Each structure stands twice: as structure tokens, then as C-alpha cells.
Image 1 (tube, rainbow, N blue to C red):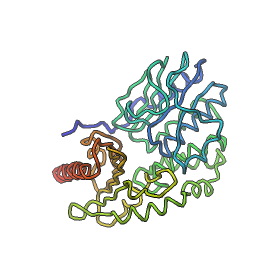
Image 2 (tube, helix red, strand yellow):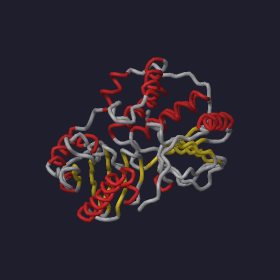
Image 3 (cartoon, rainbow, N blue to C red):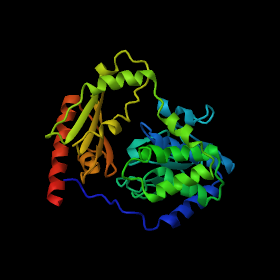
Image 4 (cartoon, rainbow, N blue to C red):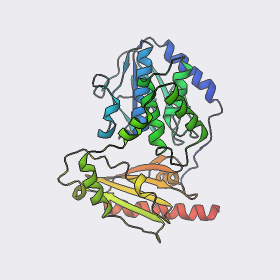
Length: 334
């Protein structure tokens, strides 16, 4: 059995937001903004929004991030830099949307003069000198929004658009169960006061390279419904990728198959070399978080992931065993 995870709100959230804002405003050295490996819309959107907000304050801000192809439009070419092997002197490292320290991409923790950790994953161990971790927030972008407002900055389309992107992508365009009233209120403010072109942004976030659709067709031929049809599962391997020139933008496929009728868990397995990345979505009282914690990963109650040091066949066995355990736990709890 995995250890229980605290999914409760941070009781000192507002005070910590003010402390983060004060620290950022008063910092005179460089600020490096980093997020996680395989960055999604929340990671990229939160990072770009914070980077631009800090630049508005006149800060020396560095953004080493590698967005997937479909999110590259959010960045201007001069905004992004290569990953840093060594931090500049007197760096404040601002870590966004990272569930665990070993998932940081862009810069090392070592050498930072101060570390701020802003996140909404319950599995985050609250590392850093100042941590704001609130699992009740639908996206890290909500926390970033609160910090930007606490610094007294006015919203502009350049800052509000990536921030809204984080909200849109982590709530499935406001379709997922984490679409709370504060998400919709925040989105309304970003559209109204921030001047975001909402229809254009939603449309642009769904653009994909033509190769994506070829890959999607191949992936759907792998669909399975194990465990008496309560699970929908697909996989991506070299045979699926064969002959395709674009980068692997398959991360959102799990959000397509999760609507298979009668299922409680959706799983995408992405094999690369000798490892398999696991993406899990769940509903009906089943915890994707518990499944992935058993596999050495983490995430949210309804959306989580893990990376297994095994090939596809063995990964399937391990994942389905973890799902069986979670089904039994949820049955016992019910």
C-alpha cells in the first residue's frame, strides 16, 4: 500500500502568496523560471505568464523551457533559452507545476540562493525556501495568477493569454471535474481585464501537425478494454511513430479515450527505448493518483502519471495490477 497523500487546501495560502510576491518584487538578482519534463499547457502557460510579469517589473528573468510543438506559439523566439547547467550567482529559482524535484527541467536546484515552489500536486513534498502547494487549485496557473495580482500588476494580453492557457488545458477546456467556480471566475477576469481573444486561443490550442492525425489513427487500432471493460487502454510505440516527421504530441490522447462509455480508468502507454511513460485519467471514485503512486509516479486524484523502467508488455502488467488494487480499494471504501 502507498502512503496517504494530503489533498487538502493550504490553510496559509493567502499569506504565502503575499510572501512570494514580496520576495519576487524585492529580489535584485536573476530569477530563473523552470517547470517539469514533458511540459504541458499549464507548465508552459504558467512559466511564460510569470516570466513576462517579472520582466514587466524590470527583473532579469531567464526562461529555459522546451514546449511541445502545439504550444510553441505561446513563446516569442527571444524568450526561451537552452537549459542551464549552472545557475548564475544570486539566482532565485522559481519552480512551477512540478510534482517532484526529480521532474525539474531547465536548471539545477543546486546553487540557487533562494527557491520558491508553486504547485498544485498533492504529491509535492513542499521543497524549497518558500512553498505554496495547494492541491485544490485546478492548475498552477491559478496560483501564478494570484501571485501576479499580489504584485499589483495590471493584466495585459501578453501575460493573460498564457495564464489562461494553463487553466484551459488542465481543465480540459472547462470539461473536467476540476472546473470549479474559482476557475471560471479567474478565466472571466483574464478574458475581460486581460484582453484575451478567447475564441482564437481555444482554436489555436487544438491545432496539431498533420502527422498527429496519422498517429492518432494508428493509436486507435491498439485500443483495449481490459478488466471487464472498466479500463480503456491504448499505446504508442515505434510502430505507431514509424515514418512520422513531427515530434510526439500524443500526450492529450488520454483525454480523448477517457470518454469511452462504461469505463472508470483511461490509460495511455508511451514506450520509448527501454522505458514506458504512463498517463492515467479516472472517474467514478477511482483515484488515478493512487494508481500512479503505486507505480512510483504521482499527480492528482483524477489525472496522474508515472514512468516505468520497463518495456511496453511488462508495463501493461504492472499498470493493470495497480488498477486492480485501486478498484479493490475503492470498492472497500464504498
